[in-house]
Length: 457
Image (cartoon, rainbow, N blue to C red; front, side, top):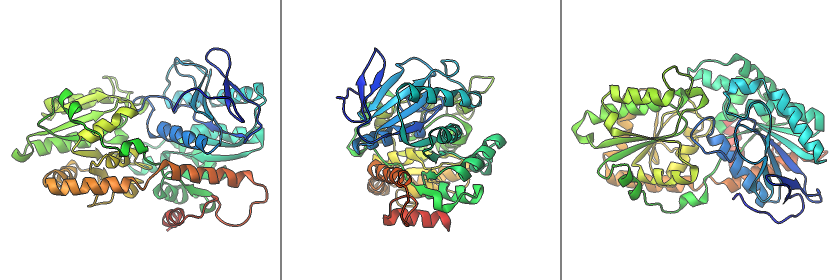
């Protein structure tokens, strides 16, 4: 949806080469979206780019259709114009903070004060004011907290992942991050959770007030709901005669790709699964690249060879999001073995293409996958349990087809329109003085109430 825009209220006009000029704010004031390390226009599946990037992009596109402008502030980490349209009423602003190259998140931490100052200077240079601030990830929250003080407007916070949730799943605890998240959870005007599971963690692990938490689950791009033919992709990968298990996501220990490899090796030792192949779509994240021997992808490739799976795995690297639909459609089953997952967008998108999902029974994946109906949820992280679940999907073609149809129907319930409606209601709510009693999120739909009731139980 990136493209030209005819100037209008609260929108943008073309200025000098590579820039956009803000038009006079005769329409609704914009929301300042703070996403320090994650650009919504970046390719997904490598570096730090994943579901957070996509969610910000889809939400800003939807808000634009609703007439709500957004300025998305990110750190410049490579080439590209200083400003770029995401949608007619949404622009990406790349701020020159730190080196113009990707940094690990630990390196980004030290630049947050500079990022805040750069955001303030940019807004001042345009004499631009904002109706609200929406911080994403804890880095964006630390910036958003300072901007609230400077601009005296409400601040909404989305975390996407939580340090204490990851630690509970067995990953190393980032104590500094956990402390900062606790402060942000207590201080933000509203917290937006991607699932009831994330809302529950905010309440139980961070003691956040239930009255300030709003649930806005991500959705499916309607284009994914169309029929896609993956046969050409199968041919190009040399997998015409194989049954294919797909993993899609950043390569880092959190995502659990090795669990799938070990499960596939167990299955291929059986004569009835000698045709099983694995496709890994994704590349090293910052958390997966800090290895002396080449990163998580190289480690997984070595592991696949060691367990006799090397000739039956295709590592295809990061895949542009618009091409992922072909991978979902090509697969017989999508496996999401994450140690923790705030929502589980890959599982949702795979289901939208009619592909059954075998996923970890963690976080938001429990809300996306209907166990035994659209796929299977697996307790724990034992590859043997995953092997059994994958076999249960693939053993019976009729059952697999029925699961695929149910998966498609379930995915259709999750829409970006609904998520945008909830976000717009939150912005309206916090922008109004003397708010009336009622939902702190500004919406009263039955499903939202049920999600929060589930989170509080």
